[in-house]
Length: 258
Image (tube, rainbow, N blue to C red):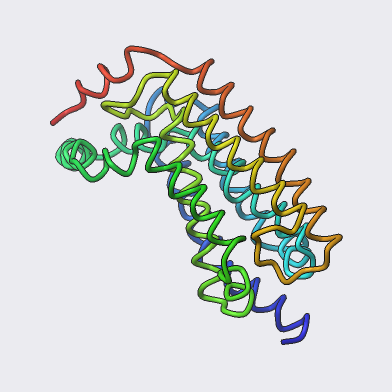
């Protein structure tokens, strides 16, 4: 496959995720405009997160990511860690509960209190989905397959965006989350994620147990981006967790219409 074909396939595979991000941002802004008292800061955070995802998946960065593994790593950090933080800080679930007509809000509230959402929203589950996906991508033939299969490439992007949002929400999201573990427990989970990122970046730098058909200079450069960029993103998430924690949020959620 030529470089031009790889670039075209990469951009084409990103279109569904890009359209989804733009649709979510537009929906958030419309709902925010119709919800009295909704924080402009939260609307800006959500829109900024969507814009970062769009920037990562299109234009020069997408072209760079298709040609150089270091560009791929920058794209990965934006899609899986930075953009999800902005999207989650926009508190989309809370906005939806306020914007929807009461019968639909009640149905959504019942759905969120079901067993499956609780299991998916648990920090350990979110950790397995986000970190496990990263290990699968770089330590198995998955990366090779995604580079030559547009639909799989799009699926990988979608997985990292969704699992990144799930992890950010489970750790420090402002949206309600009943039965959420304590702040110290979430900090432990975040510490495991930091260690996993650091360990994988070291293995990538050394070329051990990874399956990456890229030049050594690109591999080591990407490992450094993962090491330092991942630390920065996780420090931001920890700061949001500590600064935004409010013990009464679980109580407030319990008072949502049933």
